[in-house]
Length: 495
Image: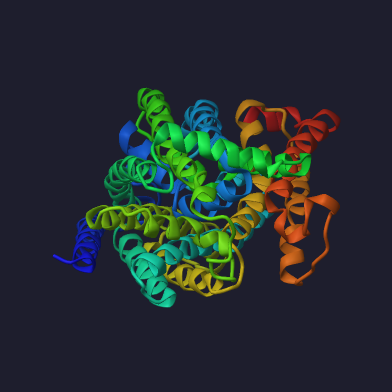
């Protein structure tokens, strides 16, 4: 068979499996509880793989791997190691068990419900709903952009067609099957990702441009030294590491993965499995991207529109990898992206339906809102597609989303799991402070401002730096306000 036949056969086989999982799981998503958290009996492997596949998508493989590899050379691998250590191991260690216990005890299905119950505040719940639905959209859109860049290069298919196809696959999986479908699909997609990344590492290392592991490391180390990274460069690098690692601690679609874990034994196992998964997938993805400067001396060969988004796709096209592996790579990226899109879509749509539309606009509170949630899922996917057509690099789009969400939610969520003294005022200060701190890069982008902060560059390119600042500001505000105005005794007893 020729190259294109092999590639398309591999892709269609994957699509058929995902559609089958969605349809077979459709009978298990008849109500909103089934659709959002399933039966809460998820084992370690399924939970960990679901967490990992929601964590890593084409955004990481294409946008971040290429961007950090080009900008920081071998130092870019630090992001992959940080993701495994802080974004997976410590995230599970600190958050998983306590989140699972609290959400089960209080019958919580979403992050807004968690805030509403913990701080007895409907206005905080409403604020969380709005922020989650609006600011998960740029992240969802960045997933589309990451996947379409690689498909357009390797398949020579129009980017619009690529985006429509991935939207349809995600819609079928989510709308037909809900949480259980995505959980099962994520397990299958996780295996694809592990196998695909390992195969890809070997293929890139053996490429003529790299010349083997030892020669490649030596060559890229020299290229990295030639970059003469400044203090500003290192701040940018470590901001990416911290944002992509600790940012997951406050993302509702990641926190959501803890809700359905069966028991504490599965939490302990899931901690190890998710760390291993992240180390292979993220570590491997950033490792591949670190070789970018061995393939290209400048970005002139890339499209003028967001050139770093096309580095990894073109590296794959020029690495001389086999036709079968090209198909596997594409399925790897599609699998990573569909799983992330599914997690984002379910979280954003179910939150809007359960925590805003039902309590305010549906008189019959016993009415099954799962069908309405599926309609909202479709709307969310369409809006994501529209935003994906904007002229914004993948890295920037994701950083706006992660910065605002984690800046708003990480501190009040995480600290309240461990301290009953956190008051409603402290939570509000943390949320609003983090939200406002993360906004400037997005505002600069929306108003097409070229305002620059000295050697750090244009403000609209500083999403990771402001995301880290937002998380720090939020934590400080929650702790300080708690000392000034701790929760009253009756609130402490309730928490």
